[in-house]
Structures are given as C-alpha cells and as structure tokens.
Amino acid sequence: MDADEIRTRLAQLRAGDLPTQGGRTLAYVYDSGLAEADAIGREALAAFASTNGLDPTAFPSLLQMENDLVGMAGRLVDAPEGFVGVATSGGTESILLAVLAARDGRPEVRAPRMVLPTTAHAAFHKAAHYFGVEPVLVPVDPESKRADPEAMAAAIDDRTVLVVASAPSYAHGVIDPVGPIAAAAAAAGVRCHVDACIGGWVLPHLRTAEPDQEPWTFAVDGVTSISVDLHKYAYTPKGISLLLHASSELRQPHLFASARWPGYTMLNTTMQSTKSGGPVAAAWAVVHHIGLDGYADLAAQARRATLELARSVADIAPLSLAARPDATLLAVTADETCDVFTVSDELLTRGWYAQPQMSCGDLPATLHFTLSAVAHRSSAEFASDLTGAVTAAVALGPAAPSAELVAAASSVDPQHLDEETFSGLLAVAGMADRTGRLVLPERMAPINALLDALPSQLREALLLGVVERLARPT
Ligand SMILES: Cc1ncc(COP(=O)(O)O)c(C=O)c1O
Image (cartoon, rainbow, N blue to C red; front, side):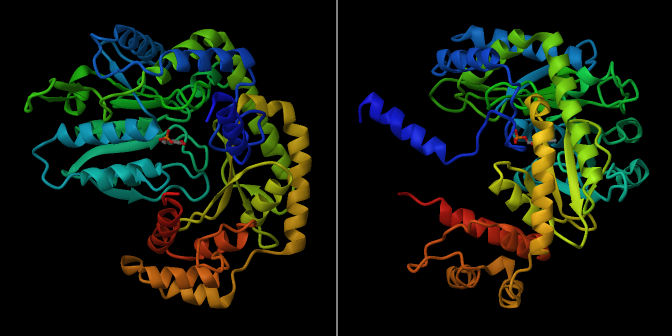
C-alpha cells in the first residue's frame, strides 16, 4: 500500500472509534482543548518513537526527561527529601510495581495480603492475581463511598504488606481519608500506597481554590508511595504514569537485573524492558508547554464542568449523585423509573459516551463521567442532552433481559464455561450471526442489565468469553 492509501485506510479505521477530542467522550480520554499542546506532544512522540529506554547510557535524553518529570510530580505531591520515582507505561503498571515492591520488601511474610477499600481500582486485583498477594476488601461508607479508616485499620494483620487508598477513586470520584489510613499502616509498620493515578495531576492544582481538600499527598504521615498518571490529567499522549516512592529503599524491590545469560545485562526499573522513548518525550513536551499556571486553569475548568454537571443531575428527577465529587469525576445513579444502562445508550445516540459501571456488592450501578478541561465548553449542551436521554430512558422503562436469557446465564458455572455453552448463550442473547459469529448489539442496555444481575465471577467469565472471541486473527 502506498502512503496515501495507508492514510485513507487509517482514517477509515479511526472513524469507527470514539472521538478523543471535543469533550463528547466522557471516559477513557482527556482533552485539554489546547491544540498546540496536543501538536507538540505528538511531534515529540513521533520524534522519539524509535528510541529505547532499555539503556539510559545509550539514550540519556530519556533518563533526563524522566527524572525531570519525576521531580515535577514530586513537588506537586509534597514528596520528601530523598524521594525517587520511575516512569511506567500507565496506571496499572505503576500499581503492579507498588504491590510487587511491597510484597518483595517483606520477604519474611509467607502469604502476603493487602488491605483495599472495595472501591480500589481493579489494577490492584490484577496485581493480586499476578503476584499472589491476597486482597482483603474492606467495605466503604455506603453514603460517602469513602474508605472506612477504622475498618481498614482493623483489617491490618501481621501478613499485611500494603494498605491502599485512592485520591480519588475512579468509580465514585471521592478521596479516601488518607490521614487515618496511612497512620494505621505506619503504626503497623506497613507501606501505604495512594492511588492518585487519576487525581495526581489535577487535585494539587485545585488546592488553592479548595483548601479543605482531603489531604492525600506525601505530606500525610505514613504515605510511602503515590502513583500519578501523566496520560490522564497532564493531558499527554497515552503510555505514561509515574510511580513515586518516599525513599530509594522503598523502590529497591522492583528494580531488576539479570546477568545470567550471555547477552547484555538486563537492567530494568519497571516491567517493560525495551520501551519507546515516545511517551516520556511527549509528556515532557506537553507538561513544559502547558506549565503549572496552565494546569491550574485546566484543573479549574474540569472542576467547573464537574460541578455544573452535578448541579444538572440534581435537576433531573430520576438521577442522583452516587457521591459528592471531590475531583473531576462523577458517578450517577438512577431511580426505579429508568436505568443507567439505557441512559448510557440514549446518550450515545445523542453523540456522548458515558461509561456504565455495574453494581458491586452493596454499591449500585452507576453512570461514570470523567470531565476534561474542554468539557466546560459544552456543559449546557450536555445538560440538555442528558435531560433528553433520561426522558427517553424513562419512556422505555428499565432494561430487562428476557427470562430465558437470565435463566441460561445463571445456570453457567464460571469455572467451566465451554465453547458450546457460550455459543448457546450468545444465540439466546441475540449476539450471534447465522454462522454463530459474535456480533455486538447496537444497544447494550439489555446485555448490561443482564451482566449487572449476575455474580461478579460469572460476569468476568462471560466477558472474558466475549473478549476471547473478539481477539481472533483476521
Ligand atoms: C484511580 C485509578 N487507578 C488506576 C488506573 C489504571 O490506569 P491505566 O488505565 O492507565 O492502567 C485508573 C484508570 O482510570 C484510575 O482511575
């Protein structure tokens, strides 16, 4: 294919995706609304795409930019003298490394555990799965959706290697009471990680306007590490997060060296070995282009958009806030006249993407909104479309999967979901074509309502079945 054909084909492929700019995609993407910042980021991404962070002596520029970004982040989150950090590929990798370091920092603990609020990001469950650290889940306050520090303290025992808090949680956008949680961890001699993947680059810029923000940085005694994603509210191209540790001793367990083969001695600070310098260079470019004053403006815009949306929600009768938002994320519940899954479908038909979040234990299903700076430009239009979407959802009534489908799905044993059972389920769900191939429905509400009604293990098994069928060579 010649270059023009490729460009055309890529544009066609891209046209089927959600838009990344313009504020209509209210999850997954972050838009500063600053065209020049986006352009300089992409330019740096391209210029450094082929460099390799595997060897900092071969590409010293990458180490220099990484250290600079870590230094900036440290100043934002009140890092102590002697703190260190690394750039990773994203929030999940930062969390994996925080858990790995906590586990390997306590080699004497035979069956390690970590204490998590039920709202901690799924990346901690992935870390549990990868590294054999048992998650001890502590319910959050049902009203505020914040972690319960007393219950968390009570859950710490001599097998605990890590205690976790979020600033804010992704699902509900609230900051956990980090002070008492970190104090309990410190009293037990245990590490405390603050997951500020989503809040780390926006909350510090809101502190002047909102001085009563719940404290969550290294200024809180007992906080030993913090994750801060740049590819979220630093508005940099995807592929970069920072993991900061209060001291180099705390980082040590996730550094890796191997000289046990005849090739180069492999020396890695993170999970990746060969890694593109593109994301670090792009982040360095965007962060220095926007600057601290620029980020303060962007944070204020995103916060304004969040509070405006919160006010709109208060005016739309079937909707309520799942929690009072502490940052730039919002979760909304619906009463019995409609359901959040249908509202999500209706928003999509109006050109907005909001993310359905299923119920989990006692926490109800919600609709999630991540507000970027650019969202403040369309607050009024969005409020009007949200009202329209809710009116339509009420007219349709709550989504309900057929009794046949519920019965078929409920009878599945998640441990043994074979091809035949899964194909049968897809057929009953209307998600298979004549050849039995998986087709995603236009409206997701009935499927989401079904999944919402199932136990989480079964939900996981069914969705993995879908992913497994989608990920097939063409
Ligand atoms: C609080 C929090 N932690 C961790 C993550 C995981 O980050 P990533 O998707 O970059 O791996 C996210 C992503 O939204 C998040 O919001």
